[in-house]
Image (cartoon, rainbow, N blue to C red; front, side):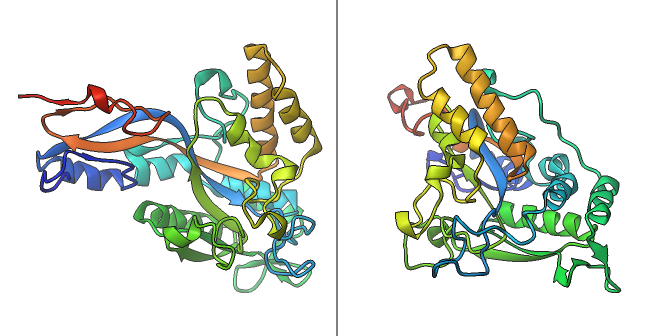
Length: 316
């Protein structure tokens, strides 16, 4: 679209900003950005992906042998430099965020901060008994501090994976990167072991596009939505995280009619999942599209991309 001008519109451009800028310079089209609530994030597996429970890996009743240690989870967050990821990879296409729930503004928590500290991460791991071996890698009770990090095949995501691998490695954490074709990773195929619903890895990264109301989005962390064989791995809670207070707050949000009180419930839910480091939010991704040089195309990050196509036109 941008290089040849053969088309008038291209949607969902998850491409490095430096590449987009080079393409824009050709003069055939331009990139447009629409605010949204789409959050790119790393999800930590609360379940055990390596051991079967009742014939099922990542069973909701199992617990991850390493990520069940809160010091490890806190260290991973401190080692993940979201601002550097924005600067190096996303540019205009993503804004670093400490929150899993982003936008509209009344739902944005003021309680989370973007913090990166190798020293603090090392201190946490040392204090929790994860000692460096002769090879510089950490271990405890004979268990290595190592993770498989999976995501879909996409140039942006692979660059973020590389940054995370390097950052975590500085603290003695070994990371194996796994990439899966998007058509497989996001598939509902119950026979495929590499879907994000089965979550056959320690950590995984993806984004969740959502509507303005956060109800459906925040359902991703309620206990009854845990992804499992019983629901054909279609449950929204793919990380199998369980928190009784979160469940209670979510149920309260379903009947709360006061918009201010309801927003406060969602902010508290955001803080619970972020403080427990079940997720490491990376960036708020606006809707990124490309349109022809003479096209005028109103778009939104809160609805289908062609929702206002009746207002599109071409300038003479």
